[in-house]
Image 1 (tube, rainbow, N blue to C red):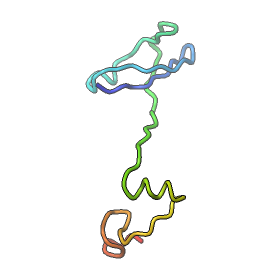
Image 2 (spheres, one colour):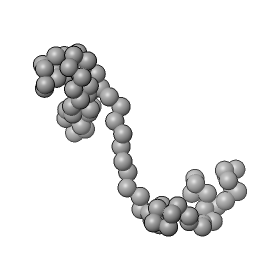
Image 3 (cartoon, rainbow, N blue to C red):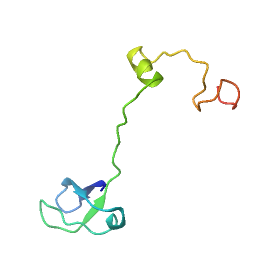
Length: 80
């Protein structure tokens, strides 16, 4: 079940609520003040790197590869 982040317009609190995706647009009561003047926030997601990307982080961002960012050999997709 996803966790959504909310902001209360009444007391300026930020809080998280676990709910199903079908409930995500329902009004949620602020746990701090009880107001239903709340709105869902855009949450930032952190994703861990693995493989060549992790090596790039450890090596200061420099990885020499014959692959493009799209996963195809350099030059074959038009991205360089």
